Image 1 (cartoon, one colour):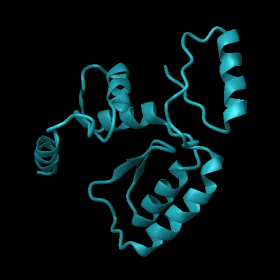
Image 2 (cartoon, one colour; image 1 turned 180 degrees about the vertical axis):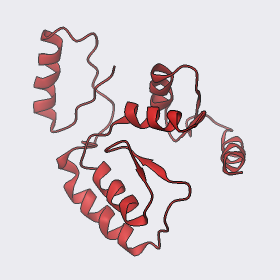
Image 3 (cartoon, helix red, strand yellow; image 1 turned 90 degrees about the vertical axis):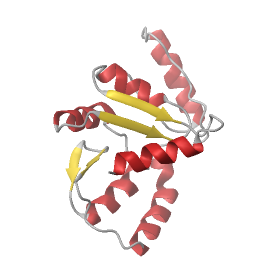
Length: 153
């Protein structure tokens, strides 16, 4: 499995050293500049909450899977809560993927930079189809929109 920790830099460095000393197979500092999924994101979470309250969200159809608790979300208010809380809390990515797979999902598309989530999905279950459509690849813009449109059908 894979575990990710987040927080202030100095405590993270100490935690990485402790993981090494404890025999972790691999310890990697991710190349990001924010403390994703941690209480250090409280100010951003408050801003996200204010923004989401202004949006006319509808109940998702079909329901979506929330990553903070690997649970189905069927109400728009719960979508707002999930998006706000994702900034502050850890996510249960493996359980979320397993729930979607168990409910019949057979194609996972990662849209955005990189392919980390695609690789993690393949480790969770190599039988499901997963692909990454990244902005990092020149000429992919048109193909990305075609795939997203096809997935929406």
